[in-house]
Image (cartoon, rainbow, N blue to C red; front, side):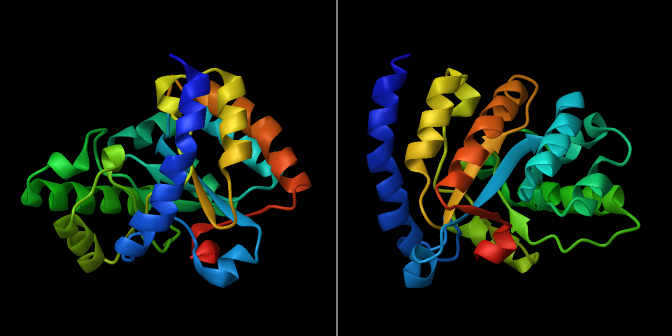
Length: 231
C-alpha cells in the first residue's frame, strides 16, 4: 500500500470529522470542540478491542511508565484473555473502561434486539470483571466505528454516550511504524481523541508507537487526559 498517499489524504478526512461530522451529530463525541478546547493542548488516548493477552499487561506497564491515562474499549468475549485482575489493575492505574460490545463485529449491522442484548451483556461482564469496584461505565464505542441514530438513542437510554475519535492511524491495516508515528505527530490537534488497538496482530506496533510518540507530544506541550476530562 502507498502509505505516503494515505498520509496525505488523511488530512482532509480529519477536517471532515472535526468540521462536519462533529457539529452535525453533537450527541456523538468525536473530539473536544470550541474555543476552550482550542486553547488547551489536551488529547485523549483510547485503545480498542482488548484485552489481547500478555500484550495487554505490557500495555498497562507502558502506560504506567509513561504516566498516560487511557480509555480501554474492551470486548466482552475477550475479557478472559486479559487474565485475572486485568480490569481491576486498569482501573487502579487510573484508566477508564469503555463498552466495545460482546463480539468483534460491526455493531451497526446487528438487529436492534441483538444489539441491545450485546450491549447489556458486555456491561454486566465489565462490572463483574471490575468487582468489587463499581466503575462508572459511561463510554460506548461501536464495533467497526459505524453508527446510526437508533444506536445513539439506544445507548443513551442505557446511560452511555457514543464516542468515536478524530485521529485514526489505520493501525489495523498494519502500516509500517514510521507511518503510525508520523500520522499521530502530524494529525493530533487540541481536543483530539486518538484511536489505537490492542489486538494480537497490532499490540506490538501500538506499544512501539506509544514509546516514541508520547514523549514527543509532551515536548510539544500536549497533555494526556481521560475522556471524562476532555468532554
